[in-house]
Image (tube, rainbow, N blue to C red):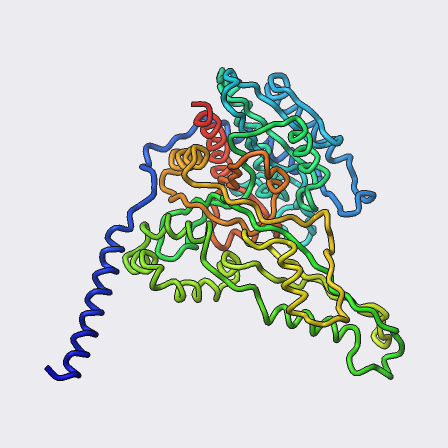
Amino acid sequence: MKTWVKVVLCIVGVIVLLGAVIAIRTATFASKQLPAGAKVSYPIDIDQAAERLSGAIKFQTLFNEDKSKVDYEPFAKQQEYLEKTYPLVYSTLERKVINNYGLLFTWKGSDPQKKPILLLAHQDVVPAPDEGWKYPPFSGTIADGYIWGRGTLDDKCTLLGMLESIEYLIKDGFQPSRTIMLASGFDEEVSGQEGAGKIAQYLKDQGQQFEYITDEGDLIISGVVPGIKAPVALIGTAEKGYLSLELSTEGEGGHSSMPPRQTGPGIIAAAVDKLEKNPFPGKLAGPAAQMFEYLGPEMSPLYKTIFANMWLMGPVIEGQLASVPSTDATMRTTTAPTMLQGSDRENVLPARAWAVVNFRLMPGDTIESVIQREKTVINDPRVTVKIYDEPGANEASPVSGTDTWAFKTFNQTIREVFPEALVSPALVNSASDSSKYIGLSPNILRFLPQRFTGDELAMLHGLNEKISLSNYGEMISFYIQLIKNSCK
């Protein structure tokens, strides 16, 4: 047989073998979804619940990095409102106030052998301009099937939704077998140090441990995951770390008519340019890879084949994910220059120039490793690199497992309240109060039971923040069912 014929036969054999491997892996790429039964819902008076959330939106609970500028009166007034609005919660649960405005509720369970669970939500919101809103941001207007205002999504809806669920269960005669605790900080949007930080420290001092902790995080999204038409409920099993670095350089300053070869702003600009041109390497691993293990089997045939064979298609997948900022962030520690400062006059050379670069750390990267890497990338002894806001920095969280009672309980609850949704672990790119509670449970799950489309994500911290009455009703049903399932 001629040599070229042998080569062709070998190539054909390899192609056939490769095709067989791809076909077998695709055929055995089995679903990880729990069976979806009949939808679970509760007879909630959503109009009354909406009025109660509307009342909380009216309090402008804004924290500030400069504590001397914080107006604490809205926080105090809001707490008075909550006590009046949820009488059964306040008369049945033990309440402890920590650092003046942090709330810690305890609903004692009947079985002391079961570890308690901890529900988290925060009271503060981000500022909102009056311009550009359909209804004023702190009006709590109920119109067009929505509750409008700052906090309807982040995060008073969660706090009020949890209180609604507990109030409902108490009225219904439910007695938990497992102790249920609810903690609410008041400065999450700044750093969480004064609220969640102090509550978490109190719990650590008490030697408390939890079966699971849940906080805001990922959502139920539609029309975002390629190849999937169904809503996707993402449970954040890990959260990125948070770090801001200040880059600075000192000089003599002077008049701009006699500049040196490279000015202080030029030195800092060059350092920032190096960081942007040398991003952290990307890799599809951890919760991001698990997400496709859970969702891949549910995708259309082409996408299912691709994700069933990540051993072969990995580089292609990573390239596609890297082309979109939101998905690129799931694969790497991100680098984002956010602040630049030189002179305050256009004709004066500054004696000091500086910039701030914000990083969201992937699990596996540490604060120290990021600092050392960026110093190496900058490679300029004139540039000093230090942490910009040390109290606000935190490491990436540990990754919570999916083969646990906690994850399975969340999975089951989602499939009962949102039976059409697919469930998957995921990585949370933003920071939450849950970072303060690391060490209190091996299972920290970050999930906000709200439905979103890709376009609606812009409402978070944006204009016209609102939640539909139907969505809010499902949130309350979710927390009722979660508490019930956690007490089985």
